[in-house]
Image 1 (cartoon, rainbow, N blue to C red):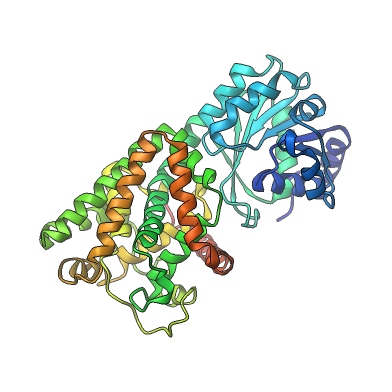
Image 2: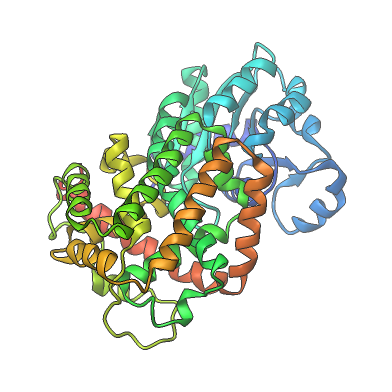
Length: 447
């Protein structure tokens, strides 16, 4: 993907501008490495008490490590705060007063309204605010992925400078306000993250690694395992920032717990027709423009991405409570996920592909409903899943970072041995789905 900006313009900016990054976690490091490799002068810092360790850690990289954010802020023309959403105000309060005169400031947090409020509260009046959010994790190639740019109060000249800078990422630029960003990220991520966080906790609580048992076989199960493990292989604050700091996300996670509970109640009450009616209403609302010829995924694709060593042998019918509750939540929240496909993360495209496959493959939803009512073999799992979903809802509603971290990291530890393999397979899934998305966009079938 060629840069849309002339090479001589980029080189002129590179000779006169310094990029500063405060926070060298996974995403901060990704930006520092990519910008410096592209020819930009980059300085960065992490915690001051870890200065010597940070210098040693990045000794082979082409950007400079400074002692703290004061040193970074004083010399940088664009300062990126790459810190946890819960800490943004504290860190900006600490280093914001040292911002270079006339500098541009932005952040990488997943919730933009609190981030920009922190900038407005603390930064000198001459600073301009242009924020970023790469809608993918640090283990995913930036090429072709959505990159949100929020020009809060920057000049046209300064915004072009930032576009020139990030052009080396080869991402797809999406232009939003902070409010639009937070609403869309909640719509595309809150419910689906809740589903797969709950799935991991349920497996942990019943002490089952699903890839070693023949109960979880088939394409849908492969996808569910890979998504859940991919989430838990990341750092807890990646998801906590969205869920706990974004008010739009709170109601959506509550709705997911409500949908899960109500659907499970119908299942144990053997109310098949009521369950069927409810799910088909949700299907008609969410997938009304999708036919089985347009699916992002199919069973042949999903079968390829297995963590299990058990020989493939069809699929085990399952209630798929976690997936039907996603679509039921979208319906009750009035969300059509395709409306935000331009601003979707790789994980969300997998979520969408999996739910689409379940609801739009002929006969599969009916098979799911039949298994939910008549087959009790997954009843214990569904109970644990419902409890987990309600627990996540409570943690998020109360805004409790410590409980969120504890629940996440306990589950992370349970699945740790499988992360390396799951990330390789997950990357293959993301590549495949991204290609399908592009095909549907070209054909005009992705609204």
